[in-house]
Length: 322
Image (cartoon, rainbow, N blue to C red):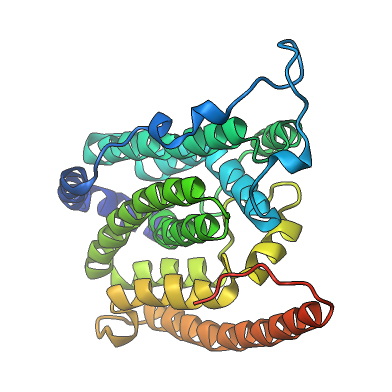
């Protein structure tokens, strides 16, 4: 990070603190506390094989669709890495004043997501517990490190999109789970993610007004290089393809339901306060969006051909239909 960028970051952290305080107060006024144990069907649970001499897990134990199993595992492992996310966010934003109060609150709320999803999967025998634990150990041993080290602007830009992406993934996973209990649970988790997105989106909106060029550069960098935080987990690629095929989360949704609405909220393409690198960043963003829409259309066409072939073979595709 250049000296100029570092100076901008330090100034923004100071000047945005009143905004963060207001946003935290707004968040607390609309956020409703909830309790993970209330969303888990504990009466369905029974001991597993091991020291308690229970029953070994079998694939037939799960009532979830295969793609819902993949998606829940991916979503849970992503949530599991919360200690790494907390560290990265705390380093980039600091833990003083309103910033620190928000980070601790956000961390506490996010922790509920891993608790409730894991408890649900264990109580209902939704996935192989040995596979899940081995994947958790492998993923958390890798940890997570943001590509935008010590950079508050890029970090807030990233989580503005990532929280909304997670909300959509959670919500659609519930829809395709074949289990109303899982759907209700994932709806509850998705509500949290949406409120977190609003906090970060509103904070970056204020940063755009204060430092439009630096903020636009952060937005363009994040959108053009976006990866979900779980992209380094074992088996992510295969699971991501199945999740995209099923319509839980695909490139078209990423553009239409995540990137475009957030950019509109920031008035990105109508702003008149940009100059220099800010204008260049917006041009890069626009070109990227145009190219990526074409890529999404190509994937959509190939997916339809894939489903037509499945149907011709007597296989009913598992997918979300609008």
